[in-house]
Amino acid sequence: MSENWRKAGWAGAAIGVLAAGAAAGVAVERVTVGRGIRKKARLALDAAGPYGSLRGTPGTVRADDGTELYYEVDEPERPLVAPGKRPRLRRAPEPVVPTVVFCHGYCLSQDSWHFQRAALRGAVRAVYWDQRSHGRSGRGLAQADGEPVTIERLGRDLKAVLDAAAPEGPLILVGHSMGGMTIMALGAIDPALVRDRVAGAAFIGTSSGRLGEVTYGLPAAGMGLVRRVLPGVLRALGSEAELVERGRRATADLFAGMVKRYSFGSRDVDPGVARFAERLIEATPIDVVAEFYPAFEQHDKTAELAVFAQLPTLVVAGGRDLITPAAHGVTIAEQLPDADLLVLPDAGHLLMLERPEEVNGRLADLLGRAGAGAAAATVGRYGSSTAHPAP
Image (cartoon, rainbow, N blue to C red; front, side, top):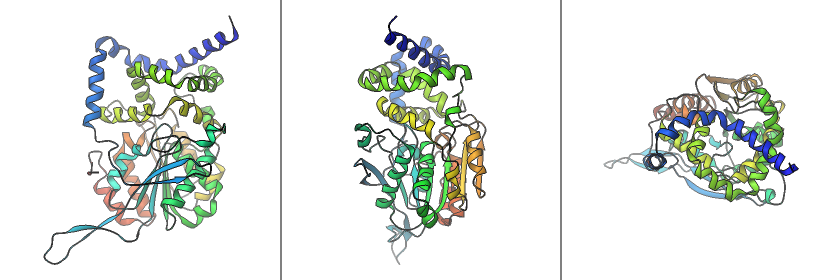
């Protein structure tokens, strides 16, 4: 057997280990429900769900390597009543509360904040942006030249977005998973900005380091094999992106099972929300998945959390999160004396989609502690997962 075939065999074994849990969960559906019916169901969910439909004023900024970063701004509104006239809405000339900046996670986009955006819409100035190579942002130019992705690079990207979309005034930074790591990196590269302008921070389903120890719900023995071969597997898959994407589409129901297993902790997730998460993740090209993956095992920002220690902070973790386990959230909270720690026992990784009411409620508390009391009241009013203000 040649060396290449032997490597291919190990790669196949590793992928098999990762997929085994999800495959078991969808096996019965595969033999009892026709593929055509499943496809129609996915299309119906896509058409029915308003998730990800909220849009703001668009903008772009160039990162320091020239990559185009896309962001949107939602401005606050206030009602004005003139004598004899019906109330109308007028844009506030100046932000009177902090700008809330949302940083999304790996293989997602700014649309993953749908429920939080619905709750905050019109109440506070908010910025939503797409990380490089994700969503509507451009592919990383430095990566095209062979530079590896690092969390520090993402911190510099966030700084570029802040300079363009929120150059003045207080900030509240909210990050999920990779987005939380991005905020930590910003604190490491520009602690003066955090000290001078950041009024509060939220770390949701994220980690400050030691991700190399996470087993993703698999036996520890199997993870040793996976860790050795997975980076090479992803690089190989990334070099055959078109072929892999065709294969991913052909096994859509297996992929959906994996997304559900690693995104949510409870069984009663709204099917529309689950399908929305699937769409977000499947929109990330496999070569982008491969580019970003190595950065997480190198990520270590526990010591750098000190710059946030004197600020109002929120830490939210899922008790069934297989990607950034709850213990990682506890570690973050231990470094932040003023942290409000919320562990949701039955929730998984996509906390803001799976448990929006609880997440929005704690965000409301954070906004109040950080000086955005009026916005906090509005989040409380529209914090339900059924709130979908018109775009």
